[in-house]
Amino acid sequence: MLFISTVVALQLMVAGGPQLTQLKGARPATAAEAPAVPTVTGRVLTDQEEPLPGVVVSVQGASHVTSTNASGNFLLTLSDVKSVLVFKCEGYRDQALAVSGTAPLTVKMYALSKAAPAGAASPETTAEVTGKPKVLSYSEVLPTFPGGDAAYGRYLSQNAHFPEEALAKGISGTVFVSFVVDEEGRILDAEVVRGAGHGFDQEALRVIRLMPWWNPGRVAGDAVRVSRTLAVPFVVRERP
Image (cartoon, rainbow, N blue to C red; front, side, top):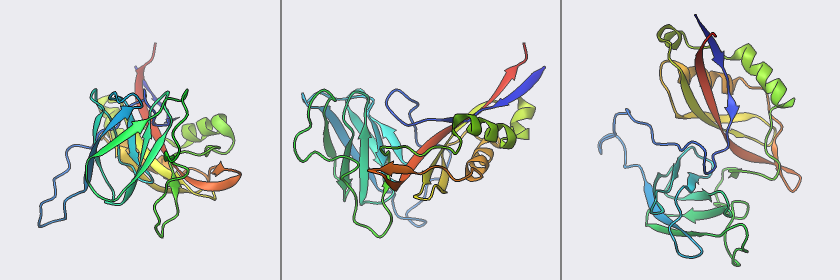
């Protein structure tokens, strides 16, 4: 006999965690349908000029994420030719870089045990001058679900439902959903960044969008907008 366990776990995209890949299966746009999607390539090096693999590279305020390969190289789709890229790697200082084109980039990251040189950018100090509110990839005080993990678990058990299509086939899957927690704690711009099909994507989005307002993230005591990513696993387990 089977029983269903639906669990949703908050997961910060850091080195060592799951790597997001671009979704497959979408029909490619032609020149007559839409302009080419801008992409940027680059290489990430250590302060010793050695390639740095496993660096998570994301577009600030957007869902586009990739990671560097064994040679330190990466390819990333941009939401706009003018974007802010955020670079994260365990044991290294986060870096942020404003780009205004698609020319290849070279980024140097510095170990936490070493001081970064003057002028090195960070996500707190690098921002595009636009009419949109700034969205951070992280904050000093992270956004949290009201009531903590216990309340979060109760919310999930009461609201998440296993899709009938997947249940009938005995299929498990995990959906990655990104969203923004604004200064008031509201959940904005939720979207699937890596889906699992079989009805999982729609259910994951529904549960995320229905969440109560969070406690907002803060920097220097001030509420800020912070982007978050949730891994939403749907697991079918056999009863012992």
